[in-house]
Image (cartoon, rainbow, N blue to C red; front, side, top):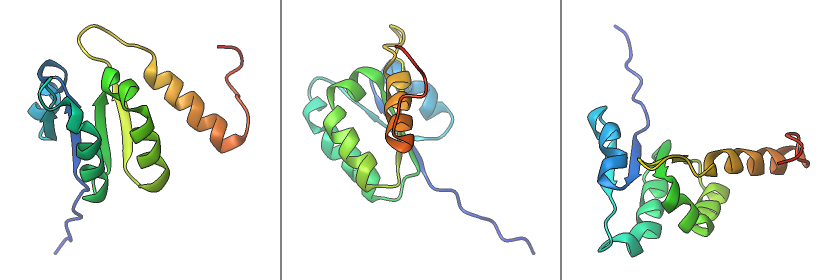
Length: 113
Protein backbone atom coordinates (compact mmCIF):
# COMPACT_ATOMS: atom_id res chain seq x y z
CA UNK A 1 0.00 0.00 0.00
CA UNK A 2 1.46 3.34 -1.00
CA UNK A 3 1.15 6.35 1.24
CA UNK A 4 -0.23 9.41 -0.50
CA UNK A 5 1.64 12.52 0.50
CA UNK A 6 -0.73 15.45 0.76
CA UNK A 7 0.51 18.62 -0.91
CA UNK A 8 0.37 22.00 0.76
CA UNK A 9 -2.29 24.19 -0.84
CA UNK A 10 -1.55 27.10 -3.16
CA UNK A 11 -3.58 30.22 -3.90
CA UNK A 12 -3.77 33.20 -6.23
CA UNK A 13 -4.91 36.74 -5.43
CA UNK A 14 -5.64 39.38 -8.04
CA UNK A 15 -8.07 40.68 -10.61
CA UNK A 16 -10.48 38.21 -12.17
CA UNK A 17 -8.66 38.20 -15.51
CA UNK A 18 -5.26 37.61 -13.90
CA UNK A 19 -6.18 34.73 -11.64
CA UNK A 20 -8.68 32.88 -13.82
CA UNK A 21 -5.95 30.53 -15.15
CA UNK A 22 -4.98 29.66 -11.55
CA UNK A 23 -8.58 28.76 -10.76
CA UNK A 24 -8.67 26.56 -13.86
CA UNK A 25 -5.80 24.44 -12.50
CA UNK A 26 -7.40 24.09 -9.07
CA UNK A 27 -5.74 26.73 -6.90
CA UNK A 28 -7.73 28.62 -4.29
CA UNK A 29 -8.39 32.12 -5.59
CA UNK A 30 -9.45 35.48 -4.21
CA UNK A 31 -10.70 37.99 -6.76
CA UNK A 32 -9.72 41.53 -5.79
CA UNK A 33 -12.09 44.34 -6.69
CA UNK A 34 -12.15 48.00 -5.71
CA UNK A 35 -14.63 47.08 -2.98
CA UNK A 36 -12.38 44.51 -1.24
CA UNK A 37 -8.93 45.89 -2.17
CA UNK A 38 -8.31 47.28 1.34
CA UNK A 39 -8.67 43.74 2.74
CA UNK A 40 -5.69 42.37 0.74
CA UNK A 41 -3.26 42.50 3.71
CA UNK A 42 -5.67 40.47 5.83
CA UNK A 43 -6.17 38.01 2.98
CA UNK A 44 -2.41 37.52 2.60
CA UNK A 45 -2.01 37.02 6.35
CA UNK A 46 -4.85 34.48 6.39
CA UNK A 47 -3.18 32.38 3.69
CA UNK A 48 0.20 32.57 5.46
CA UNK A 49 -1.32 31.35 8.74
CA UNK A 50 -3.28 28.56 7.05
CA UNK A 51 -0.34 26.46 5.87
CA UNK A 52 -0.30 27.52 2.23
CA UNK A 53 2.98 26.81 0.44
CA UNK A 54 2.71 29.42 -2.31
CA UNK A 55 0.60 32.42 -3.13
CA UNK A 56 0.62 34.01 -6.57
CA UNK A 57 -0.08 37.74 -6.22
CA UNK A 58 -0.81 40.06 -9.13
CA UNK A 59 2.15 42.45 -9.59
CA UNK A 60 0.28 45.74 -8.98
CA UNK A 61 -1.00 44.34 -5.68
CA UNK A 62 2.46 43.02 -4.81
CA UNK A 63 3.87 46.52 -5.34
CA UNK A 64 1.02 48.25 -3.51
CA UNK A 65 1.18 45.97 -0.47
CA UNK A 66 4.98 45.46 -0.48
CA UNK A 67 5.27 46.18 3.26
CA UNK A 68 2.79 43.41 4.11
CA UNK A 69 4.44 41.02 1.65
CA UNK A 70 7.89 41.69 3.14
CA UNK A 71 6.60 41.15 6.68
CA UNK A 72 4.93 37.87 5.75
CA UNK A 73 8.04 36.70 3.86
CA UNK A 74 10.15 37.37 6.94
CA UNK A 75 7.95 35.55 9.46
CA UNK A 76 6.24 32.85 7.42
CA UNK A 77 7.12 29.86 5.25
CA UNK A 78 4.74 30.84 2.45
CA UNK A 79 6.27 31.96 -0.84
CA UNK A 80 4.53 35.01 -2.26
CA UNK A 81 5.24 35.13 -5.98
CA UNK A 82 4.41 38.20 -8.08
CA UNK A 83 2.74 37.47 -11.42
CA UNK A 84 2.09 39.91 -14.27
CA UNK A 85 -1.44 40.86 -15.14
CA UNK A 86 -2.97 41.24 -18.59
CA UNK A 87 -1.21 44.59 -19.14
CA UNK A 88 2.25 43.00 -18.87
CA UNK A 89 5.11 42.76 -16.42
CA UNK A 90 6.19 45.56 -14.12
CA UNK A 91 9.52 43.75 -13.38
CA UNK A 92 8.39 43.32 -9.77
CA UNK A 93 9.36 39.64 -9.86
CA UNK A 94 12.92 40.33 -10.92
CA UNK A 95 13.28 43.08 -8.32
CA UNK A 96 11.99 40.69 -5.64
CA UNK A 97 14.45 37.97 -6.63
CA UNK A 98 17.28 40.48 -6.73
CA UNK A 99 16.41 41.80 -3.24
CA UNK A 100 16.09 38.29 -1.75
CA UNK A 101 19.39 37.12 -3.24
CA UNK A 102 21.13 40.26 -2.01
CA UNK A 103 19.72 39.69 1.47
CA UNK A 104 20.83 36.03 1.41
CA UNK A 105 24.41 36.53 0.16
CA UNK A 106 25.02 40.07 1.39
CA UNK A 107 25.63 41.67 -2.00
CA UNK A 108 24.03 42.25 -5.39
CA UNK A 109 25.44 39.43 -7.52
CA UNK A 110 23.46 40.54 -10.57
CA UNK A 111 25.56 43.68 -11.13
CA UNK A 112 24.16 46.96 -12.42
CA UNK A 113 20.42 47.32 -12.80
